[in-house]
Image (cartoon, rainbow, N blue to C red; front, side, top):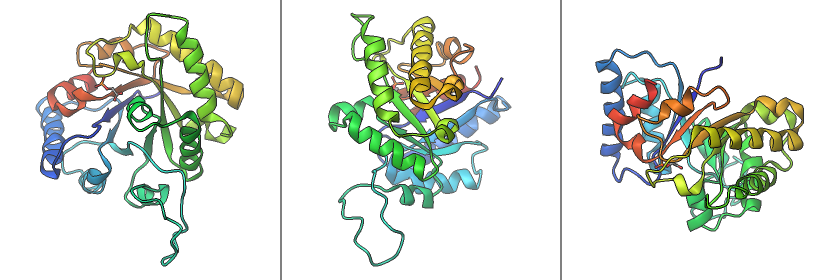
Length: 263
Ligand code: PGA
């Protein structure tokens, strides 16, 4: 069985670099206190402004935490790296080359909070997916339905979002694609999905990916995200068809987060 993946999405937290360091120190302390050997691949996704700092900390292994670095978003244009051009006339955006330069390996794309508050469309998400894959990143694409009143909404939304986002991706990209099934109603609400329904969504996601990328996508990595905590994480992580979890709020609490890593 391949190693499970645990993603910490810090979202727009914390507000200072000092506190970002405190979280890392906390992770390290919790791991050493329990002399725990990591069995999962951990990916930490801080806000852009903390990436460079966290990158240095992880490289120096200052906190005894082996983890990869992830960004929470990327822009789809990738200007030439030649100095003196103004190909990057996209105020406020961050290019794949910039992320690459500071050691980012993974990029979250299409998180529901960006779809909702920033108006990200499937078309924009597709452009970001293709730009990130072209630049050699691993992507963590987020998909999920808004409401659960209607169980039929899952296949429709999941199929639409997955096929739109992966349009134009190629077979060699499959190993670089992780899809996080994140039902929007479960994000930040304290109400997680059931492992059975998450599994059903994972099956659907792989089926849709096979339609776009061919049969090699049958082992595509699929995570669950939405109110994951140390108590419920095991139900998802230990499930055969679910490759890990994406953790939001709780990843800011070292004790809880390391509790998830220990599952
Ligand atoms: P949550 O967020 O764990 O706070 O529900 C998950 C996410 O980042 O989507």
